[in-house]
Image (cartoon, rainbow, N blue to C red; front, side, top):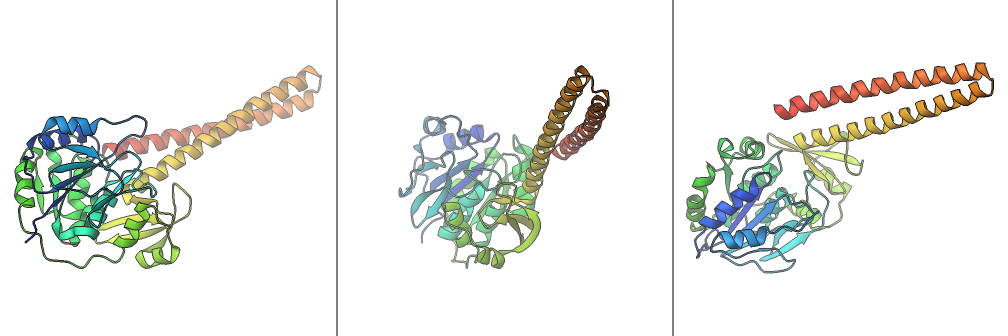
Length: 335
């Protein structure tokens, strides 16, 4: 029987050190392909492939669109591309950002669930926010084995904590315990075939760069009252047990927690725009007041002075709102 020959690992903050440790512990004959998605900045070229190659016996490289993936090799999602597994090949998806990231963990896990669920081991490591929880749940439902780093052991606990609470993984283990666990799991026979959720193909196609459909979104979830933080279109709420997430028909996707943060960012930007406009109106009103005073039009000068005071009062209301929003966001982050 075929073994579990796909190991998909997702991580974010703190992930470089975690991946370097794992790479140093893989055996030379590791009988699985290792797929890695880590949130990478597109502002500079990453040397993660060289770092992981030097750390251990397995070669590591950034995935190339269309290449066949092989055992005993580490494939990394490049910046600004979702890593998709499809019919024995790797695809680099240009679809919209998910959970405010591209590459995002969820598309990798979902594609692995669709392509080779019973042959897959999926793992979420250290990181912030909740990317990966929904994809890991989809992988488990499709017959994959799921692993989450013990949050108390993670450099950043939020991502593994969310995955632990939402996806109910098969294994929770420290980083130090992962190499032995991975080696054991990938040498096991693949599990039995399991029917996959009907929405997986659609969501993987979107991550790959396909077009969305309002009709298909109506079949996946229900229309919410929220607008997409990216494109401002309608968002659909998708319930998956205790997991609620949001997606628009363009393809932008958010967990509920990240959706809340994105809406906070939109609100902050809106406050900033309003404050700038009011400050500009204050400056203009004062300039017109000065001009009216210089030309001897005292009545007009007093009118512009009153408008300036009115605009300043409105601007102070916006400043207070920004301060309260920042305080609430700080408390939410600390919690």
